[in-house]
Length: 477
Image 1 (cartoon, rainbow, N blue to C red):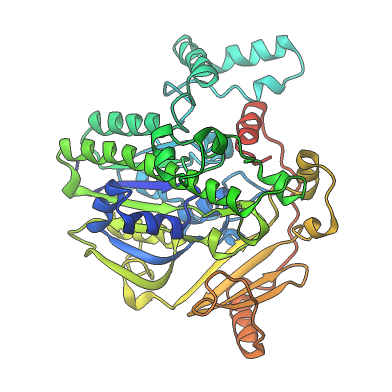
Image 2 (spheres, rainbow, N blue to C red):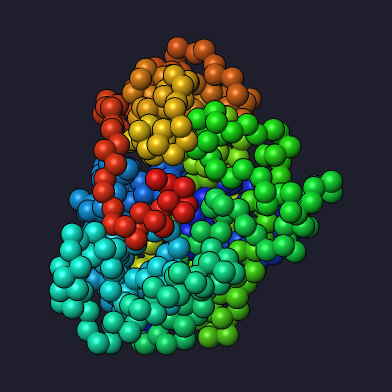
């Protein structure tokens, strides 16, 4: 496949580090463990954002969310620099993306630089995107636009994709089996060019619906599977105070969440076996990252919005390419946005003198930053989904950013929120500390890096009908 290494960038959507690392230590995700045993594993990796769009924007560009500009208010991916797929494509890589998350799709320009890109709910490559056509005012206009857009070949694929999404796409899982099959097919049919393969797996995302056998193995002894499956998994009603949840309920949900990761591990095993059978493991760099974490009752929250606590920004990260990257555990603070620079260096793309903290220890500054430019969903959207909001819930209507230097972490809000934590003494971020010197030091560093914090507003950017339906299924809007 050429002199440059193949690159597989595997994102485990909604994967928090605490749960993932525990499963690794317990031996319950053996395929991930075999991969990580030959990798450099970053134990203290921080995501640039607490949810999908800003975090992927940062991993694809090496920039913080306020720098690449992709967030709830502007979900279309139009960065100021060359995104990773395009940079690799310009260097001769065949670039392919498969995503189970509707945000990370051609509809939001995240296919920029990819030769091919499809979603997990598409059966075939090359079908037309029809969501915007459904929004046209007349049937005649819809038919005319459709006729102009699709060929005879793509019309068959388009119809097949519609039928597949409606009746079969989610019958077995949240897309992991189909994504893995697509990835294996791509590798099997690869030509001589080096391959860049981006995969977004959605298994740990709400709703948690793992296979019965794995769920039963994880659930507490006194909990029946049917009971577990009937628990509330609507985060917005809980956040808005419309649904009460007990500590036992969250214990059950955490078991289902763990089960989702254990199921995903079986599909990662399929992928690794296919790579080995093709005899390309030695010339393939594999990056595994969580784009963000998850709140499962912590801080009075569910899902992955409205905060920048460690439950959302501490994520797993590993790079496997033993000939170049020596397998080891790294405890230094690192950022997932630096995946961009690491991949450029591994593929010999661009200026190799640029700082690369993931691969070069001397480039690390023991500092990590996360941003939450606007609330998602907005308070209006949350009220529409969950009912009337009280004043406490409306406090989430703010922009946030956080910085960590060593054990000290500062969270700032556009409403004046200031929370300081010492994570060595309070890893759960339960009790803010009062330390003027540390607060000023971290605030000044944030201003130096990003400027003053401004108020961001979610204007509920319009999306086409198909995409909106997919996002609503995931609880985003």
